[in-house]
Length: 407
Image 1 (cartoon, rainbow, N blue to C red):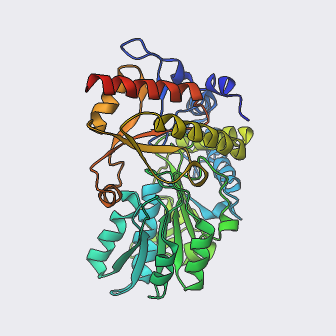
Image 2 (cartoon, helix red, strand yellow):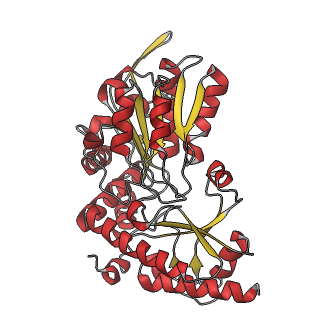
Image 3 (cartoon, rainbow, N blue to C red):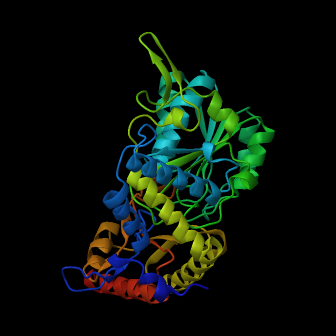
């Protein structure tokens, strides 16, 4: 198990106090994780020692910057067990990675009447790009239902597959319910039906061991900022034959092999999809985050989060008026969304913040899922490698304060 006290010393922000003098209790890692000192220092050292543009320069700084940028790509590829670093495309975030697939692969391969299967628990990032495509091309969208206990209805999914879908795009782990979906089975069934698969792994890659070869995913998207890395950078993994067949996403420098006045030739993978000066320092930070998580061990992180989540569900069950959404702890990650009877989630979050307790309130960019359960919003506490059972106790004590305040 993790030595959480030792790990917490790696995160400077966990030492700060709020304006009211309370120590920060950060329970919002599903929105964005905090950053260890090694990531902060790696980016600082890059700017102090090696800052230059990449790939073109032959001077010392440019070569160092290029080496650091591409070394981080190699680390990320190993982290998700991609066969080659060429299959890792840097993007701004998981949202852009999904949009890249929608704008390139989908617009090249789908036509009016084709079916895309999504799920009712998707983040807006894996809904809106497909709505835009459907409006533009006459593509049909249908959805795997979510059961009352927060799981996907796989029997309904099998029925949808009988309609010859071209793409199945789904979240590996729900950012609201915490549900860990059976990705391997979903992908296998999609492949048997002749469909391409896209996995939104923004919530799973930071918390679980994700192996793209074992999953056999065609595309997989994730973000650095949810896995101890910086904001502004993410990654798309894709199978080589698919990436090579796709047109470029954006045009400009670095994505070209040759440009003439009346034509151009795109660059090789992965640079074909990386136009312009990229987020170089952020890539360095991304690589440092992967190093940090690898050193701790993803299985250790998953086990720690499971223990914290199980404890949180037990404690929340003690609070009168609290309703928790999603499956039991053995089927979910470190996410707990709940309502408190008679109190709006925004009020819950604001009152908890007085004691330095940071949770999320709202629809969490998953409005259709909240509509499914007949609620406008939830409060969400989410856990990561630096959280403790004592912080869960602070959350529960805070909820009793909220109840007292609202009578």
